[in-house]
Image (cartoon, rainbow, N blue to C red; front, side, top):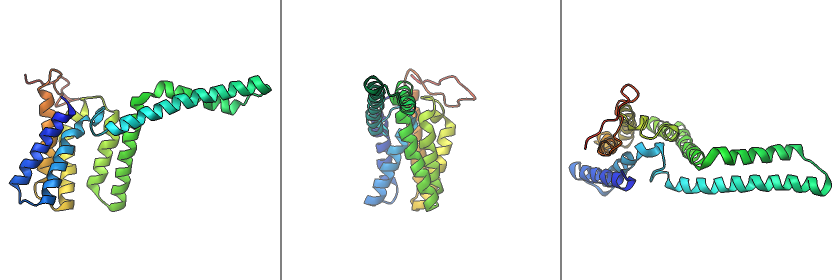
Length: 213
């Protein structure tokens, strides 16, 4: 299912929560933001709305690595042809850069960028003594390396997300924030269950996809 659809469902959940709980503009904004992010976070295990900007950056970095590697190879070849000078260190480095461009791929670079963001969140959480932010950063850092519709699309991920939401609720002292986070995350899994691929809700204990058509 498209990320825009997941986001729309999450925003609807947040808007409903803003009406249900005591209303203020700030509270409503927090409810909608938490529900929206929660509805999208399960797809951090692949290209998604949340990582779209980093995907564009990863393409640029990938192109720079490839182009830079071949430029270095050309420089080594030129130095040898012009002056019969062979710089072994430069040659090894240029080959390493070329190989990194060939084998890493844009997806790996994007994953590394997302993980870097997660590590930044964890560091901020440690500095500010915010356990929920450390957990959120850990989730963001690990998710990109997992199989798509794998662990992030399970009841275990919902439980972990609920723990993060509970920490945020206690931090902001805002009633119902954990429920909204869980409902937003669950909405993603339920929506994907309606697709032909379904969702492995209890993976890895039960590896069969559950589908509702």
